[in-house]
Length: 170
Image (cartoon, rainbow, N blue to C red; front, side):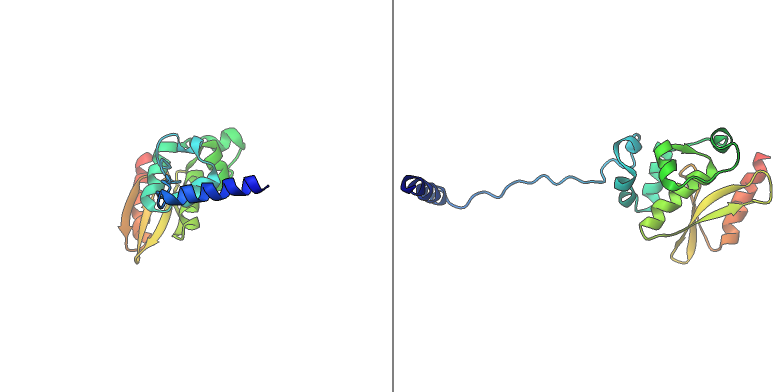
């Protein structure tokens, strides 16, 4: 026991004689690096990616690069109109317009933004949905494909733009 104690003391003196040790180099990685890149949905779980998509531009980039729009999704998968929760849209990587808008708004709401669904021309067979975001007294609009439009002074002015686009599709 005495020998072990002597070795330990010798070791302490030897190490302290060399001067202070250099600080350990820690490699800090950005947990959000690559969350808007193509393939991010396969590399990040839903829980991991939600806090990373914390700006309108990040959500737009993620949507454009990682989520597909399929206007026949509900008919093929539900047999009627169905509303998937955000986590399921993320998991599938595809949905129709309102599913994509649900995902966009979810990311923004969970990160403190005042985001909401806007139904445009919903009384017609060819309506659409977009995600509205209140920003400094105006409304910024994200469409289902990750494009950003605005700022609009009112909900009505944002709907005029998308109503005209809906009319063009008829």
